[in-house]
Image (cartoon, rainbow, N blue to C red; front, side, top):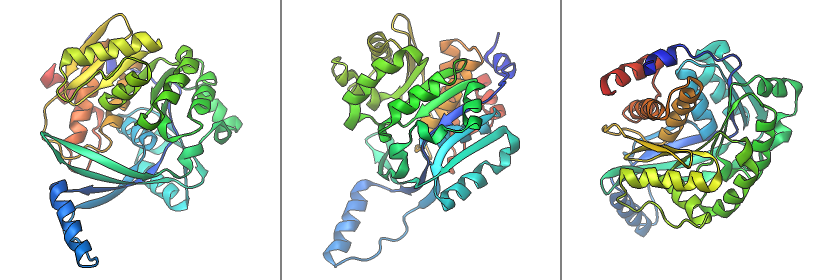
Length: 345
């Protein structure tokens, strides 16, 4: 059965639950970091001043909110658990209002995160470097999912995604609670940048492996986790498709969880025995902050629709490529992804 037909037959009975992080992102797009640093140096030498004409946008952010929004744009039912202050909560509600009752928002009161993301060319690609005030995302534990309504949402979930373990000191406890209370759901983790906590994360996987269906990581997270697992640095600066496949296979074999590894050249899947790779779709990137979140959203939909690994990676790559080519960073609707899938498969 074709990819599109399988996706059209997907039926979400409960919802895909996503948690926990929300950030307000300020994205600053630089022509080059060298020109930016030069401008800063000149202003500092004069005692300060304004650097004008820098394209800047304030947008909703955080892995959980981005993944939930991408899922909603793809037309599936979503339940988002997160934390925000009054202004942040209003921002979330406004963003998700277009989806009506397809989205359930469970926002607890607290301090959301704030991120300043610099996007600039580096070598032959566009990169982003983020500076973050984590806020109460740093301690989002099971106590924020304590109501009967919260537990009912988890119990009826088709899938549960826990994002940004790296920023959450209670990430392991939250993941255990969410997964144990959603026994019928597909369980998915995207830990975000674990480099400063890589040993802790590797240890946490020993607890979480038996209840986790998929661990989604990018090339940087792959190297951090591989180092922590004693596998060394698996991906150099000019890695190949075979190296990405091999890295996914080595990590999957070590942790006992299926690995989805998305990189700038393509994506790989492995269960520790088999592995497959699908090349990325080359596009002129307009935005990259949040690209991994759009990839994750399509990836879990692919799992729930019963796509095989090759089909699922192609579908996720198509979704991410449409996201990064959009100047406003707006994720695609499902019909747009279908159109691209038909062109490239």
